[in-house]
Amino acid sequence: MFMAKTQGIDKQCPIEAGLNILSGKWKLKILWHLSKGTIRFNELQRLLSNITTKSLTGQLRKLEEQGVVIRKTFPEVPPKVKYSLSEIGTTLNPVLSQLCNWGNTYHAYMET
Image (tube, rainbow, N blue to C red; front, side, top):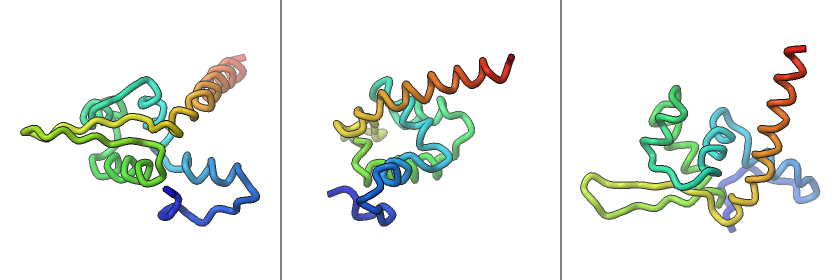
């Protein structure tokens, strides 16, 4: 369905499918912000601070092709675009939450 433009995935290894979706410098950060709700492009770019417009556009397009993110365009001048997680994308919320929890645990561990 949405897998046409992703890397070839070994159907025997589900971890590879997950890594294919989540790998990339910005994808996890983008997904983390989208897990909190619908966000406009410029707001997302501000939240990520160091990302270029080109990189953000590319990462969002890739996530949209993979079926994880939904892009909604409003016919206004200037154009208004909002991004949100798709139905399958929202299933990443527990994964993102657990990764955040692990990160906090790791920080605490490294401080001791």
